[in-house]
Image (cartoon, rainbow, N blue to C red; front, side):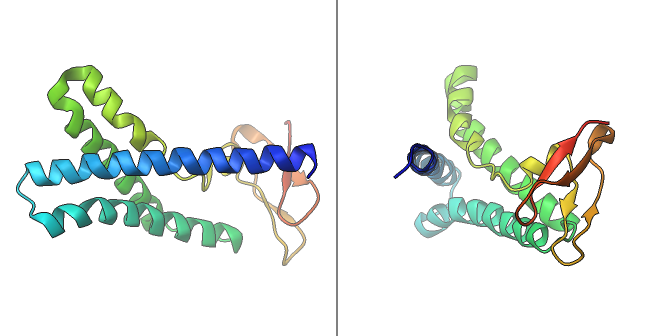
Length: 159
């Protein structure tokens, strides 16, 4: 294995581990919050999964649309942010009984649930279309982009 492959593999393993830790802690927070507010066993166990499922479904829609050179549906973006807000809010509410520091500590796992879908596109929305072979879109702040090589990769070009 080359040095770059080792770095990529190690990075992926660490990211997956952190995501797993955050998911377990966040699940327990939302489960505890549900139990404290009158949810029975099954409902309390499914509540965290419904929030995470919403985030996952919306993320997959955004990824699918991006990979097919289409704009993301507004409903998918809204549902993603709704799910993120719900998980952060529930984690904060769980820790709020322990003061400000408890709320901040409890909110920390939810911070890691935001999927990276669309993050690279926040700075520049230009995409390379495989079908047409042309560049479409101009980034924020007037930056343009040009194809940088394989597939849909783009390189930012200063204005």
